[in-house]
Length: 103
Figure 1 (tube, rainbow, N blue to C red):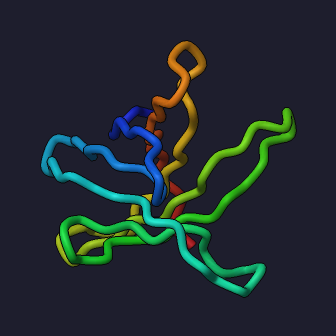
Figure 2: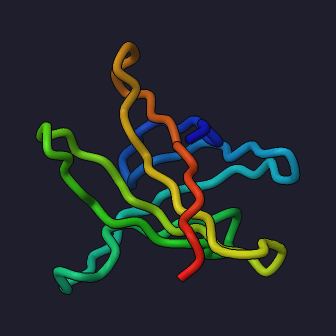
């Protein structure tokens, strides 16, 4: 796994930057008002373009995190990532990337 983004919590969700070898983009995780238990808790936006969604989860250790799916026509496949709070810096969050195996 690798860190591909840095975020700060704000009133509407999280704001930060995703930075990879081929992509650098300001991204916002905006909280949704979804009434569905299975629906995403956040939508991801780069500018005005929606690029993904995230679901609120809790680890076995009781720590909250967001499980995100990010997609764009330029991607070969969707990117799955986890937004977690940095252990040493309260209010700072890292977006950790992982590649899922082919389905």
